[in-house]
Length: 249
Image (cartoon, rainbow, N blue to C red; front, side, top):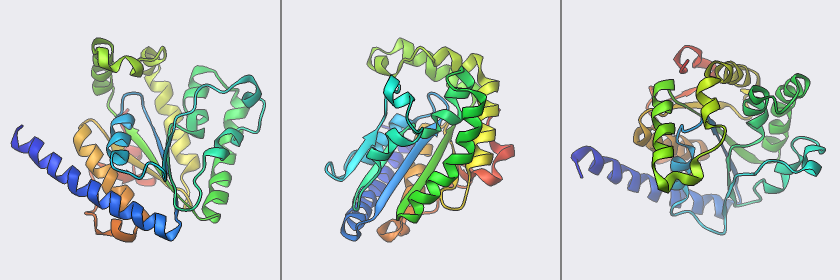
């Protein structure tokens, strides 16, 4: 391995040790932690989640990636199927995509009506305010990627047999509907960024740099031992309210 790779592995190990210490603290304190991963296709959600959970407590950590809703679930209150997966005291839950499907994929692909989309944008902050009021620490991450880098990664998925389960019938739509996804993203970030659950944007064209900075942000947001983590790079991690001109278009 080169010096750059060695430095990455050393820093990742240091941060993972701090993640273990911080989770032990959240367990002892009965903290409820919810981390929401959203972003464009191939932006690196799976890779980041893998590094976060690699040494986490298996009993106190859950990764939730829900499939397409059943007919019964589709008739329920929209947030209902997510509620059973929320964290209890001492638990950390990571949503690999979440209720924010209705903020991006569903309106762009025509899987919901315009009225349902508008209702969601009004309801999501209210729902999250209730969770925060109930003691849940909510960390919402939007992983952003350039169109050129996304095209490269999507092509690599098809060619790599080990990435078979990452390939989706919607992958091609990510590029052809790029502008529609951009508009949906901008509206979602503007309407659902609020004090109880702010959005944090992560530039992910450099995967390894993004992973390290995501972990730093999570650690500092949770607090306790995590407060010892270095501040994330402001060129990589930034608040949604200040990121309009910095998002990929």
